[in-house]
Amino acid sequence: MVVPHNAVLAIYGDIHADAVRAEVEQAFASWLPAPLPAGHSTTQPTVVTPRLSEDRDKEQAVIAIGFPGTTFDHPDRYPLELLQEACSDMGSRLFMRIRDELGLAYYVGASHFLGRTPGYFAFYCGTAPGEVERVEAELRDQARQLAEGGLTDEELARAKAKVVGQRKIARQDLGGVAMQAALDELYGLGHDHGDGEAARYEAVTAEQVRGAARRGVVPER
Image (cartoon, rainbow, N blue to C red; front, side, top):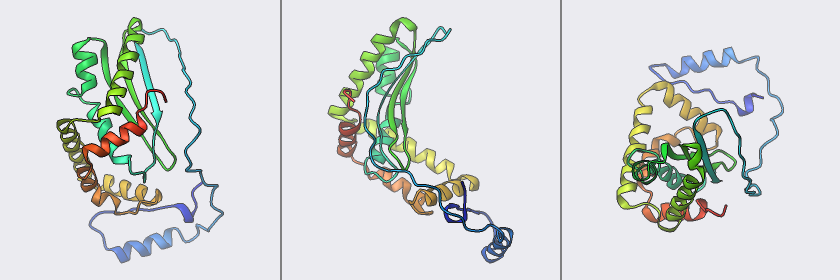
């Protein structure tokens, strides 16, 4: 449910702010306040460890191993995003070990999903049906290595360069800037949060990544 209390309108471009404000106020004049929707808890949910399997008529098996994640404003957010990037390109340790060295993967990488409530951090891999157990063991071993040692300086530098570059490219489009500003405002981060995003990624240290991995990428969880 969208009401005036929880809506954000972002307008970017070569505009005259006063004229646009007047038009917006006129267009939404009949939009009356209403009770806010019930909020969501931001507390860490109870962690369970289910093992789910689904069979389909396919010649490929897909395995995903997920861990409890974090929120937008948690200190581990940026370290985990860099960890995800470092584990997802063709030069990553997952790719080099599981695909290149062992020949077990069609694709392999990591995913990081976060929100106002804790999300997840996951490893995934597409492999042959007969290799599932072996791939799972390798993914768990990679998780264990990351939890113990984090990323190397080279891995961290490459991840920073790629993430910062992607963010800068995205901000070249006014629609992308407007979307980020509106969402950041709704998330409680502030509409100008994106302006300092590159600096926040650059400030992440190897020790912070190691700590985030130690807390988040725990094989037993």
